[in-house]
Length: 280
Image (tube, rainbow, N blue to C red; front, side, top):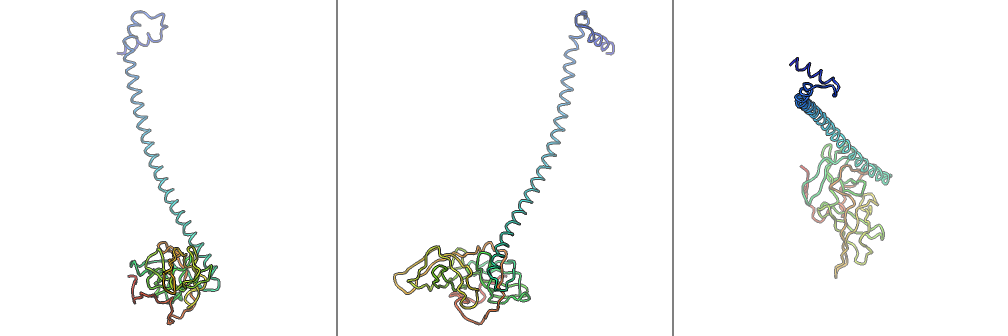
């Protein structure tokens, strides 16, 4: 094999015109072998290169997946922060509109499960000057009133609870009525509206301030339907609350004193039942 290699080397370095029959024979015999060796070496090199490349691609893909996951978490945090900022901004605006009242912010920590008796629990209690009957508001408008205080927590009777009744006026025409909860987030009914009253779909209803439970002028909801029976002194309406009760996370409690012994339409709804809708 050494001699063969020497003859092959000698034939390879010769000028093609000076090669004899032996040189040409050696070149003819060695050409397929050389091609085979080149194919094997190139194939092995290519296989190794592809393997290394695939390993690098897998590592890169893993890094990219981690980066995407990190970016998604950051985006979720940013969106949550933005949503919280929007909610808190609306609360600040509501706080400014209640410039003459003492208020305190609270977080919603519990939600009642009854579809008719709607209550929430907030993280303020008697040590925070919270008392039964105090008004509770959100950035969009009236939420309800404190129905009970238990230690460091308080339960809030929502505007849509069947026991809730709020004295309201039509902001445009100043017509009075009573907004009563129906146990559903979609709306309340408005009754005790004089038959000849000027009330229309789209009218905004605000608290009248009568009874001393709620500050005057708080947005309660918007009229979505009116009714006018053939007989009777009064007409009715349906109202969509201004507040999205399913999305409540932060509220303001108005800390002004209230007379909880006073009986008014705002304190007792037509279907009131003691203890209904209490949180566990």
